[in-house]
Amino acid sequence: MLALEKRLAETAKLIRLGSFEAGSKANHLYGLRPTEASLTVVSFDIFVQGFRGGARFEIDRDLFVAALGSSLKRAGTNFDVETPDDGSAEVYGLDEDPFDGCMFALHGDLSPMLADTIVAAARAGKCAIYWPGDDPIFAYPDPAILSDLPSNAEAPTPVHCESGSELRVLVRSGLRAWKKYRDQVVREAES
Image (cartoon, rainbow, N blue to C red; front, side):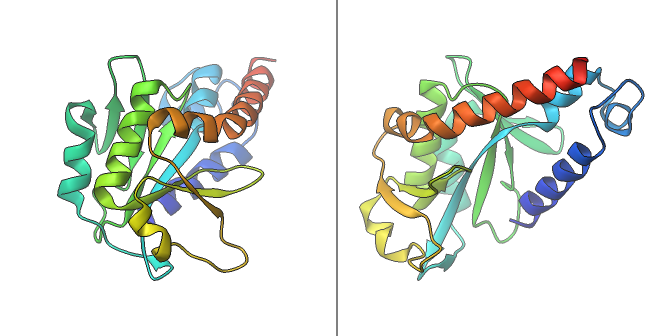
């Protein structure tokens, strides 16, 4: 997960650079216009994490990748997941060693097929799924992992999630809040 932590730190640094005005460091780094830079930097992140005994735990990368199937594409040094219903996400951490999970960075909606793909990969890897939100939860597709999730007072609430449609319902409020934030960043970049 070190790559994920680096990406989050890099994203926070780029956001602190300002409103992504023409000629800003963020635009220069990525060769983007202000609105494109804002949309690139601002993502809704869904984490898929392996746990054992309440701590991060290495998962079987081959099973996880197999569950992503043909939707997984190499994108430079990283990966993308693209589904036939126009779902897409950048995937970070997939090539980390040890592999204990990854992050799906969405720049738009969580499509039905993308949600199904994330749940299938989490089930194959025996992972929990979580994302930023007001009431943090661990969505778990396999009931067998419930006892391995963190259970301290600060840990997110575990919620069984059997399908992509259930995942879409669970992330709805976080995704709405993120879209509001993203749109604000874009408006500020355009003004």
